[in-house]
Length: 404
Ligand code: ATP
Ligand code: MG
Image (cartoon, rainbow, N blue to C red; front, top):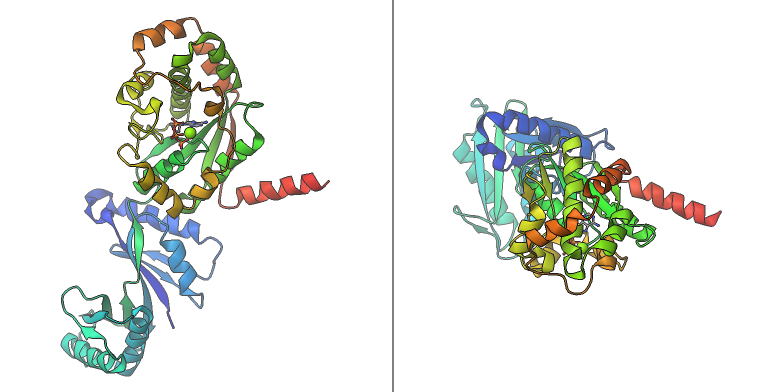
């Protein structure tokens, strides 16, 4: 019965001159998300986006669409011929799909075709009466009804819809420029990545690993987490940085209390170089104020000191429970709590300084070949594009290799 799915744009309606570009980007993102469904016809118009189903099921389309940023609400639409009987049937069907006891409804009709025999009031009245009689217990409510049925009378037919699903909100991914996401295997950084994407940022993931101290599983876990994020954004370049030499050097030269601070400064320097090379505008990480020793204001200031690039910390004021809630929502939580050691956990002593002094840090780093270490790490990166099924393939390949 449902013939198309319609999406209303979110915040981008306030974007003035950029609006056109935003809508174009959103259209491209939606097309990319539905690449595997050639029957769908996607049209990103000035005021909303339409997906003609051409026989496809509406449910999976709505579900997929609800993960794409830049969309406020999603509605199933039934297109009918211009007859009041057809309109009644379609409106009742849509209301029934949303109805549960206690819910109210309202019909709002707009006419683009003024030659149709019914005016807007008549349509509201006729359909309203019909639904009121057909569904026992339903109430009519003009202000804030739970089910808002919209009828549009156009030249080529009637378009009847109800808002059914909340969109993901935010801005279309790709409209805010590129950011480098420092992606560990933990709970926080994937959530930070999600929130950055929500504001239109195109991400590249940077992951530090230290074989043989960290396992291939730990690396795979970071890639799997990146894959989880691709649902919201499309493919994500994944940059793997060899970090072993740096961690061994730090272990040798740095007093216990400063290991964490200097490790983070090295990561930041490398991420910043990659950012420059890859023309990123900002660095995104999963820091949240007060969560651990490295995440005090004093600590962040000293770590931040190695770069002038903006460092975005979407989780800065969130509590752990809020972060976990979001991680569950975006389906990264179960993966993140798998017990594979991260490169930092292994080398970080139990008592890092919570208020590191920049002066000391600089003195310690003086004794290390910081520049050389950074250059060698950058020279040793490996890049891979992660898309929705990348890891499926590698996992299958691994499985296959294990069997041989
Ligand atoms: P997460 O849950 O994201 O690992 P965390 O609470 O464990 O965060 P830290 O270990 O202090 O916090 O790391 C702070 C941030 O530094 C992380 O959120 C992430 O952005 C970055 N980071 C830490 N380890 C790595 C790594 N191995 N590769 C890339 N980025 C990392
Ligand atoms: Mg961590």
